[in-house]
Picture (cartoon, rainbow, N blue to C red):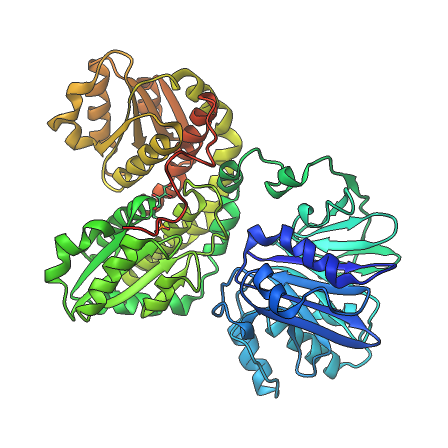
Length: 609
Ligand code: F6R
């Protein structure tokens, strides 16, 4: 996730407006900032790593000439958060200038093709292929207009993008394009704007034009024209009036960041499917060679590790040890050695307990691998290899989209390892790969079809004193996560166990009307979980079951049920099954009049031990 902004003004200079608009997009990332303008046929550019205010103090971002310009605030994905990787990026001659939000999947192929044609790259980003591609198109066919060269270049790009492009060749326009990454235009009868999100221009206009996938836009001082990619067909689209406040707009109309982030999951999961294969390959090679693998994390990230231990075992026949980071030193510290491998998982990459565990492992010469959502965080700096989980900044304190992104990456890693170890047939592999691609759509479907029902359940049970969450196998991790979400934002004491363990003590708590949430995918545990449901029912528990569509057996037993699409492979089930539990926690918190974005006593990043 990054924020892009561009504007063409009739009067005044563009840079101060780009600067203030980028500030409103800073929630999308703040690893670096850059602005480029055109004046007197020349590009003027300032960029550096760091938050916008920090960079402005040193560079004075307002001090660039010209009425036309583009800007970018970065959330690093490809390339560390350094000045060299900051946007905008240019072609070899510095005449074509590009800002980008998204991931160019085939950038490695394009980059080596362009390098073979003599192009010089200065950054490690995927974005930099775009200005060079446009340059190459224009070199090969000098008769092309900028718009045509961009269109031809887009035909070569696989992946997600919102681009804004300026060039000295046609200094009076901005060309933008969108596929999957958000792009919206603003107009006010005088000036024109393009941005990742409406808040960027809400101070200057409330008239917006939404841009759809595979659309290219030509912005000039006279207005905008939208064309379809790749055929250039003209699309007429009138502006809409947005009646949001700036704060509402930052949440894209959602009342809370948490629900916005729950709704972002189809997109963030799609992003995880774009992770470069060679990172998965490298990480799985380390795992394959390891003598023993510890999966280390805290809170929600620990639940992802717990699920991963089932994924690695079931798919790749690799036993792993999930360990709470805060316990790692005591539990495993002495046994860690040069043959140990630590896979640390952390959204923030800054959690003190996780960093502490990793440091201890490093001191004992173990190999440290990691998954984190924040490239450039401490964890990325201390890891031998890391993968970014591509969820974009998460603002709600309760982890939601970062959890499902972690699970998606871990499942891909387990799959890669299974292939490497020859533990999976071609048919199984094809099926899993296909199912992984379907998961974002399943999550979209769950939110669209189940939220109203979940609201009703939340209303009915919000006054409960205690909740139980039970699952078997990999769904134990989902149950643990459902419990944590409800507890941390709705303040309802909750208990989670593997369903089999519930008989060894916890069942004594059950009284008439006690809500018990069962996570019930149609996997090998299905028959046994029915037994566990019966045991709870017999003692008066109210059963809230999360089931696959068409699971009539459990639906008949449950007092309430929430459905997810059917046919989900076991190792992927925590992703769709976690989503209803996120919604349950969110709506229960609302029922109780609580603000789910700011649970008491908690912080987004826990940097103390
Ligand atoms: C719960 C939650 C926390 C974090 C935990 C670890 O919703 O967000 O439990 O998962 O503090 O944080 P990271 O993943 O940043 O290491």
